[in-house]
Image (cartoon, rainbow, N blue to C red; front, side):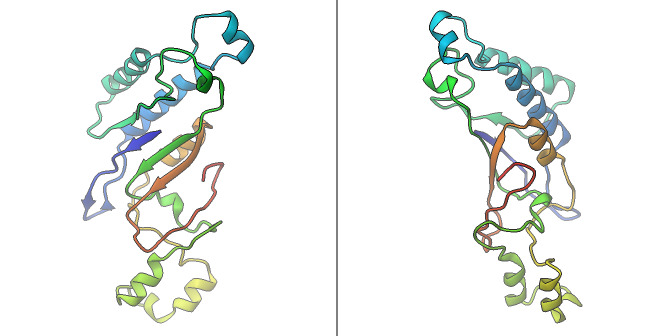
Length: 192
């Protein structure tokens, strides 16, 4: 499980995005995880050594990444009983891991996806609140026909974190908050 702090409000960009050091730190850690494959059930019975990275190895990878480019926000895996940071192999280490990422502000890549379930609600909320800018407020039907109503309250800057998650080939799903009127599930580039 990954927990990212995407920052606060920022007038020029609407919301702070993830800094490059955060993206770099995640990429370094994800690469480190990919280099440590869990033992197979048969080899686990015959060896006591683990190929799962230890907590100290992960901390060293993160420290090395931060030393190259210090980050003001954090991107750290949350420890749990089945964490990748475990130093001993167990049954959960031999099974495929489900990687999840949580953050507050949605990625720009969430715009214009086709929902599998739920709906985008921000556009409708802006219409009801009379906050849709002119001339769009006069032609909402055309905007819907062009599928441009599927929008999220994201930063105007793209941090590249979504592409780093895709490149890692290990992220299963991402979750975000912020858009109180939206409750959709979408699938893009291998990630829910």
